[in-house]
Length: 213
Image 1 (cartoon, rainbow, N blue to C red):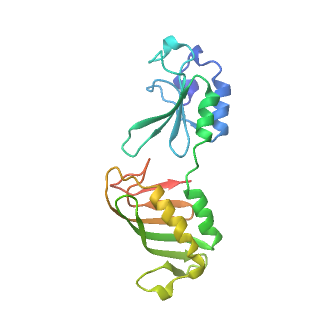
Image 2 (cartoon, rainbow, N blue to C red):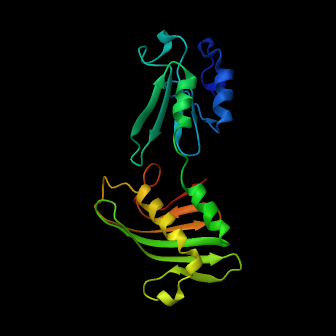
């Protein structure tokens, strides 16, 4: 198993134990690799904290700050979100980032006695969202339409409040940089999210990805 200890065995990493504990307390996992420029930790959302050498002369970029918070987009391009010589400043920036909305939305779905939900939708240019169908599987295994414009009599009125949450989520998680319009489907199933369309960050537009939260 690769760790900062065996990938960067140098005195310049002294004090790393305290830094590692701070990162791991926030759910980061040590994913250091000797071919990188310095040790790094990553959380389940893809946020990465880079911890460079304390000795500037050993850094690949001596003038850069020791600690960096970054995120990769769906194309693999890296964006720097915070940079400092104080780990607490970088972690404060990380703490201010809103958690991924899937977890909260899934909790609402489960509170309605639903074990999975399928959503079909159309996103127009500029972020206009039209949910075209929502079908839920209840915990007893029965299938019910929450929303079906073709057969409105089948709608489950008590679940209609989920439409606003689903619509807001779909708009918030789309990447409009490559597409003017998007037709997509999304499934929530037992804590997993499967999305067949484009999304920000780690989801591909060409193959289905599954993200665990």
